Length: 217
Ligand code: G16
Ligand code: MG
Image (cartoon, rainbow, N blue to C red; front, top):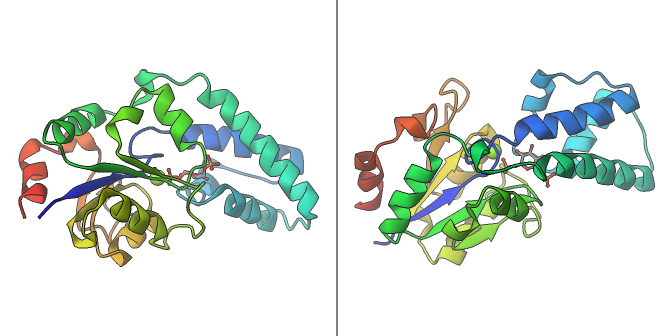
C-alpha cells in the first residue's frame, strides 16, 4: 500500500507567521485595532480573507467590499516585501533531512497550505522541487478545518486517504486531516494539538525509524 506525505507550509516548513504578524499589525495600527502576537495565533492556518474578517470584528469595523479588497491587497503587498527577502536559512530545523529521506524512498509528497503565496515561498527557500503537487489557497475554496485541501492533495498524489500522513502545526489543520481520514502529526505544542495522532515539538524529534513505521503499514 502506497503511502503519501502532506506538509502544511507555515509553521511546519517555514515560520512565515512572524511576517504575517508584522503585516497584519501594520494594518491593525492603521485601523486603530489593538493586535498582539497572541491575537495572531488565531490567524494561523486561516485564509487571508477570514483573517481580515476577524480583525474587523475585533475593531467593530464595518466596511464596503471595495475597502475590504483594498486592505487585503495592502496587507499582502506588505507581507510579500518580507517574503522577498527569504532564503534557505529560514527553513525550520531538520525539515530538509525528512524531505531528503522521503524523496530517496520515492515517497509521493504534497504541500497542503491555505496560503496563496505557497509557491513563491517554496521557491525562495529552494524546496519547490520536493513536492509532486502544490495544493494551496488558490485551489481551495473551503478553509481548514474543512478537509478539502488534504482531500485534493491525496487525490493528486494518487494515494488512498487512509494512507496519507499530514504534518500540521495548527489545530484547524489537525482537525482537517482527521476528518479526511488521514494520519495526523502535530508539529508544535502537544498541549495545543491534542487531537493529533502523533505529536512532535519539531522535526528534530522525528527519526527515520518513525518515518519507516508510517510507510510500511
Ligand atoms: C498560512 C498561514 C495563515 C495565512 C494563510 C493565508 O496557512 O498560516 O496565517 O493567513 O496561510 O496566507 P496568504 O495570505 O499568503 O494567502 P498554512 O496553511 O500554510 O499554515
Ligand atoms: Mg500552518
